[in-house]
Figure 1 (cartoon, helix red, strand yellow):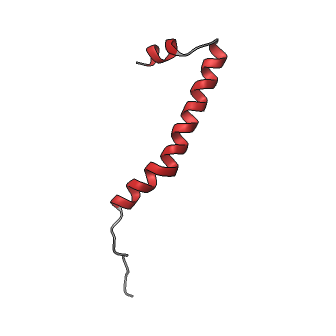
Figure 2 (cartoon, helix red, strand yellow):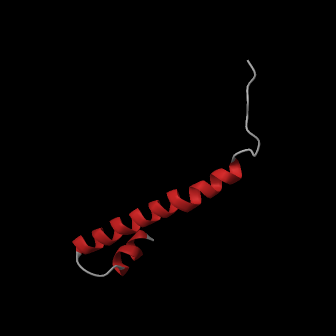
Length: 53
């Protein structure tokens, strides 16, 4: 899988590394901006938890 991805990228090695770093940064940004908050909203209980002293 990773070998096919590596061979499919254009350019010399330094350009391939740059493309992969940018792609990983975009994926992490998308996860932290849209996916993780969506999942947190689905997993968090709707009622706040309070503790009486």
